[in-house]
Image (cartoon, rainbow, N blue to C red):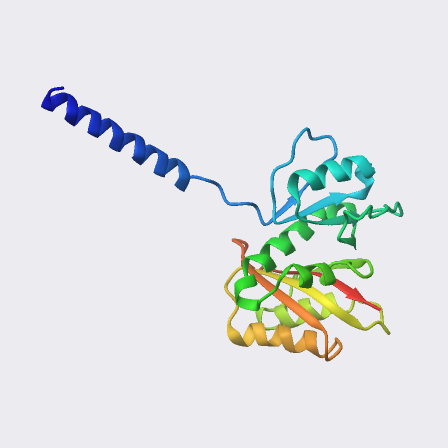
Length: 224
């Protein structure tokens, strides 16, 4: 074997190793939240999964899904139609048909901050209907002076919770055109804590969106 051939073999090996390392680095992260449909032949992994009850899931299709993804799974109830849990469903969230995407967004926002707030899977399950169905509410600020937008939005959101109910768990996502200041965030938490039980748990998410003068809040809550 000549010196040139030895060099070429070494260079080829280095290129192969480099390619393998690059391939490993390009592995895509598991999504935080995924909406699954029963018609799919296979399902991608996700940290949290959702199904819409109205899509017509049955016991076998749910078992097939769970065997493939093995993640915490929530059923979204968009009509009066119910579903048996079949030891597969971890919680039920009541919402409107056009709110499914927003629920997924709330999860993604809160879970992306989980290292800061210390939320785990059991917290998620309790916040989203593990013991009884959870509900979804949302509010948006429109035609309101900047100084009143946050206060108005959070009050409008909380006023949708029926009077007389005690909120035990809540996941609340705040979407705005800028990163909230500490004072702004404190005004939200103060308003929320004034309306819930002392031992309640609330988990927050905060996202920025490129829309001028925009405030939106969405919450998933369990109350009794």
